[in-house]
Length: 397
Image 1 (cartoon, one colour):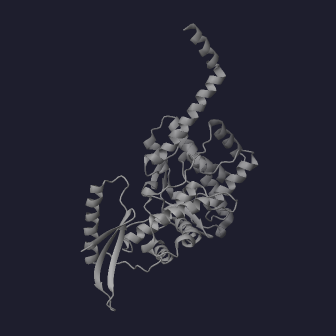
Image 2 (image 1 turned 180 degrees about the horizontal axis):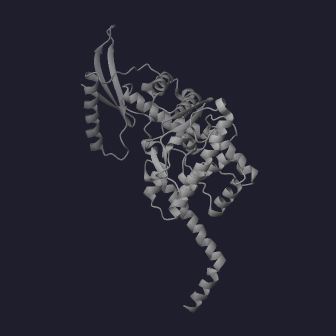
């Protein structure tokens, strides 16, 4: 029968599993921490339920834990098994986070010994750590690193190394972050950008126009092939994305199932694509056998892939060349969404075009528009002198 004992504000549940080959008792244990809002009666009821469930799992062999395994060992197991499930970019980011932050701070600890307190100390240490620029790590970055920690411990629970997840963030405190700023080009900014674009090579002109028309991510644009264009239906099929990690380029599946989508484009964009395709065909004939025949829309001079980083690099150069205030390439995606919303397109349609998995993500563009609307009202007040007029009205009321 399971035994329960209180340890501070947590409870330890222990189950005897016989003896090992040396006659030493084998004890499986787990720690449970009740929610701070639970009453004594609720705690007792839930504790007994968890103890019975834990004992059943131990007896039927569902819990097969190695109390000696350390977190750095589990990290290696995790990365080895998750490599096929994660995109190359995500795998690379997770590996960096594990090697640079998680292993140095927590890797020496045994899994069974790690508690929520260790997690809180880890978060606090990240928040105070200095970057190469001598600034603290941004709150959003701290949370992104912690997501990796949570993923590792969820894996540990699924694989039977742990019963309880000490990395559950319910009762943990994270550094507060200021509201995320969403860069959106205003009408004048879009007009100026497109005017400057007329002086640039045709491929980049087409790419930027297509980014604004579709709201596609840079990786999705880089992965487009000519068969993704449906000339009759005036649509672009988005079903893949380009990655570039550690010098290796390739095409991968999109972020989520919702990222698989078909986007209708305006007539002018279709005509621009047709013209560009003819010019690219001429370029192929000039290059002859040197042309790489992967049928990509946007390529190097010899038809090979261009990476998402190449797109960002060119865009930075373009903005600097024409003295346009710096924005990330991703701002074109934000701008595309805001133009549609401001023109009366319903949010569900915009969300579908962007490939968002839920409307909450798209809502940030609505918030940006609301902020812009407040600025617009203030501008009208200044230009039309509503303050003075209002004062006169008050006097005559």
